[in-house]
Structure formats: structure tokens, C-alpha cells
Image (cartoon, rainbow, N blue to C red; front, side, top):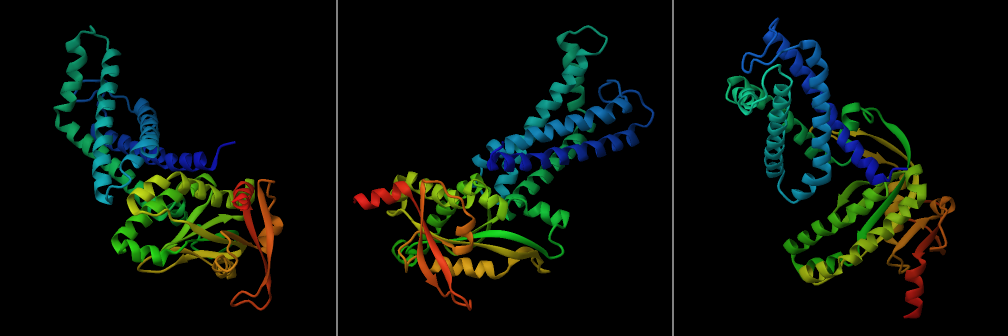
Length: 372
């Protein structure tokens, strides 16, 4: 079984292949329209066969797209993650263009090897040199550059909107309201007002960037999606089956704790404090759909969001890091590594009936606190 992170990465790579395949197919049709009945390329003298190209070029484009997608997701997006939007697109597009030009040169060399002539250095290099010094090469390179820019804009917008959001807009999944059963986690930084006052607004914002960046890894690993950021609060969501599978919604919380603890030296060195957080979870039916005209957004509405926020608001009162609703507690199947206990019935603001709330603690953390 693939991990949630691997599934997400595969889903991010595939659009690169699809875009390159489509653009390559369009190129074949344009090339046929320009060359007509010619049986060779005027710039290089190499054979031209439309029947072969209509298959080979899109397949090569698909492979090139998948390669660039793997490079993007696996390496380049991480190397340039802290660059501005424009710098990321310019730097990465330049690198991809260099890679594609090398790929083109290699393809021309392979084609020259298949020509029925003596394979001398001059005979191999001449077609490559003739191609890249011909005006036709300028058009092709500009066409390839446009493909790269389109894929880069797609990658950056997709990353900015969040996994799956851009494809949902394209496919119109939420163009009409859709009901879904979802788990929501409202995760809030502890003592954020005091931290902001001590650090100042600029350094506090810098810490927030590091904080959200570090926590995002656990959200990916445990199949969650970040619905919204609200100040120092992160709202995370799962479809019910994804959140319950392997207790992803609970494991995610404790994975985030471990991530921050592993970064203690970094936070203490930069900001003089290690941020901590608390969270409330609840699940229920929500309505999802697109709203807005000047700015479109996919939003969720339903009592489950308000209830999750109210539960999180009780964490300080019960001195708990993680609280969940009675409904969610009943369907969780937690291993012995966790201890769940009731903190009692509570009447949450906006609700007519009381709700029993449960705290969840990791057994190792609990035993350490008792010993101390």
C-alpha cells in the first residue's frame, strides 16, 4: 500500500505528464501543417515521417513531463520553496529549459546514428549544430519554454491553493453544493499573544512561517488537507474514511508534536522559545461548494466547524492538549499507545444539548508526566 505522501506526490506528478503530452500532440499537428508533404526537415536534412512522429513525439513529451514532474516534486520545489513566486518560476523554468535542450541534442544525436552514413564525429554533430543554429530551433525552444512556463504556473498555483483544490476547480467538483462527512481539527498555538508581544510582529511572523512549514509535513504524511490558516490557527480536514484510517487524524496531531520537539534547537536559537499547540476535533456532515465572484474559494459550512472550534477552546480549561467530541471518540479505535478519558459533559456555545468531551494523551507522554 502506498503511503498518503506517496499518493499525493504521484497525483502531483501526473499532471506534468498530461500537460506535456497534450502540448506535444499539438506540436505534431502544427509541424504537419507547416511541413506538409515534405519527407525531411529542411534545417537538418533528417527524415520526417508524420505517422512515426504522431506517436513518438507525444510519448517523448509524456516521458519528459513525468521526468520534470519528478524533478519538481522531489527536488526543485524543495530547493526553491522559500523563494518568491516570480523567482521560483524564473529559476526553475531556466533549469528545465537547459535539461530539455540537452534532451533534444541527445535525441538528434541518436537520430543521426540511425542515418545510413558513416558515423564520424562530424556526421554526428553536423545535424545537431545545423538544427540549433537554424531559425526553426528558436521557434521550437520558445514553444518548449511556453510549455515549461504553463507547467510551472500550474505547479505554483496548485501549491498555493492546496493539494487537489485547483483540480477541483477545473473539474467543477464543487461547482454545485456537495454534502460530505468530514473530520475537522482546529489547531491553535498556545500563548500566542504573549509570544507575539515578546518577539515583536516581524519576528513573530517569521516564527509563524517556520511553525506552519514544519507542521505541514505531518498533515501530508497522514492524508490531511489544510483548509485554512487563521492567524496562528491551522484548520485541518479529512474525509471521514481517510481520517479514521490508521487513526490518521490522531496520529497527525502527535506527529506534529514530535516534529516540533525535534526542532527545539532551531526555535530556541532563532526565537528563544519552542511554540506549542492544542487542538479540538469533531466530525459531521458539511456542505462544500464554490463561492465568490471576484475571488473564488471552496468552503465548508456546517455545525461541525463551530463545534470543533468550541472544543479546542476548552483545552486551556481542562489543561489538555487534545480534546475530541463524544461522536468522534465512539468511532475511533485507538491502540494501547493512547489513553482516552472523559473530561465530562459540556454545554458548548450555540448548542442546546450538552456534549461529552474526551481528552487523548500518548501513553509515553502520560507516564513521563506522572513520574515527574
